Length: 412
DNA sequence: TCTGGGGTCCTTTCACCC
DNA sequence: TCTGGGGTGAAAGGACCC
Image 1 (cartoon, rainbow, N blue to C red):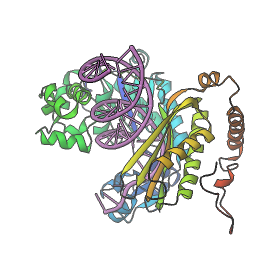
Image 2: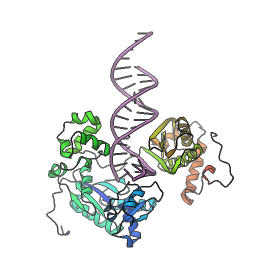
Image 3: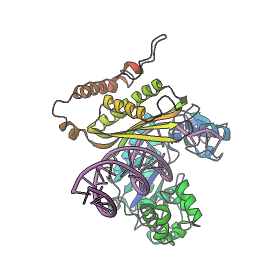
Image 4: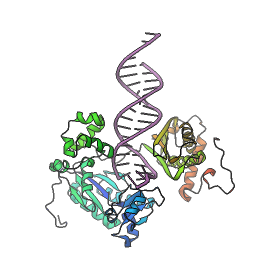
């Protein structure tokens, strides 16, 4: 006890799971450095014509601004907002410190992104008090140590904990007692359920299902016909408050990649290939830094009309080498039928089918030619680590001097 | 209004093998 | 020899999440 005076504490005895979510994370971190902006509309997002809102303070949200909204629209809705370009490195380091606060409470922490995590505090309550007290303690420490606020949901499982944190935002804490789950859950709109976005929401509306309670009262078979067996089972479980997923501390990544939207649509294959090289480098570097190699290379091409196609190829051996990823990406691009004809607004490179790099190396034991490439790229990683990622790069990625001829196309 | 970039997961289709 | 079916893995697309 001893906390601020409030209504009788809800029963959190069957609620071992916490969901902690930073409030307007990127924007809050920026305001730490510019306190004069506190309480004002602030938007974090890129400045180029095609960027979107990454984070907006609550005063900005009052004007209808929200994340993922095109910047052009956000600025129209709220012209007085201060727009700040993102500093991802900074958010990442603040995130690490916040996660460290969580791990002081329990080792069972599952980060979902830079700004949110699930915690299983069932082992900590004996030492630190009830789940809700632990949640308040975390909120207090984050505020003191990082000067930003967060919201905490306390519930019997992950799904409900997340719903709770959404409901009490910003700067709040909400317990969903185990014996009042349905009372809380059933009046909510179907869009509150994980996995219900625009498309599924429209399907459910068509079926006359508006609230979570409506879904709970619908036979699974009826949902299956419209949504498929997996989604039907998933929604039925959530709608009755069931979620058996555990808090996992070591989630293995399944793919890594990089993509980029051009400022203006591009059809020149030379420029596209140069972009593919840049993205292949980033992808390969990410693979090496996570100690993984990939079996499959995927490229993504988004046309001017926003239609997106992907093309993929599975390699004979897993790789973490830029050269191999780039060569494969170029071959896929050439075979896509879009090379040289379509105007593209985005290209992407992704590596999937990840295996530990150590396992991949043993398969290359027979003197494969790519080994020198790996050694060379590892050396480049070390230089980039010391002097920055632009300290060393392929000649094709150095801005061309006036009069210099483009690299001949099709040559490798 | 005009849509980023990082991902995960599911479904469908097809080839291939038995 | 032809046909069918199940299982599996790859490829492609799409919905969704933060």
